[in-house]
Image (tube, rainbow, N blue to C red):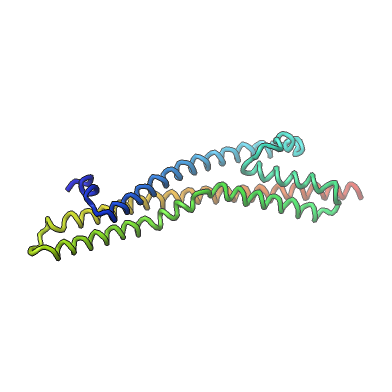
Length: 224
């Protein structure tokens, strides 16, 4: 009645259920570690760029320090997209609302790409968290069905007759919970971290937009 013995002697359907749950659990842990490292790196990069941005550095100099062919992430990506559009529109029009609308649109696209990057594979965690208990329950039901079939083929019902079937059914349930519980916990944590970071990106985009708006107002006042 050891667990390895029960798994090896379980029905093919229950073994497939267990294999699916083990694969889901392993993949979810890979996603957990990969997303956790990526989010910590993104938070560190944001803190460094924010410190540089608010240190009083000239925005043109800051933009020139970012290589055009080097893809950036986070707030730096949003700044790069917005300031690139600002420089592109400035020689073409003197209409401040048009320039600011173009900058805001570019930063919105950059923010959307950052959202996709930060939340990458989190849907898989949510799927494992929601589906694993039901997959384990399917294995449980199949094991209980097997126990009833074994009872129908014996003259005298004993615990030894149904115990292996019930045991493998409970193992399937336990494996479903083993896969689902970490996925639920870390999905909530990682989603919360990504949402907070995306909120910081959005705040930065609004503040940067306000800075450009003030610059355009100053230019219009000087020209008049």
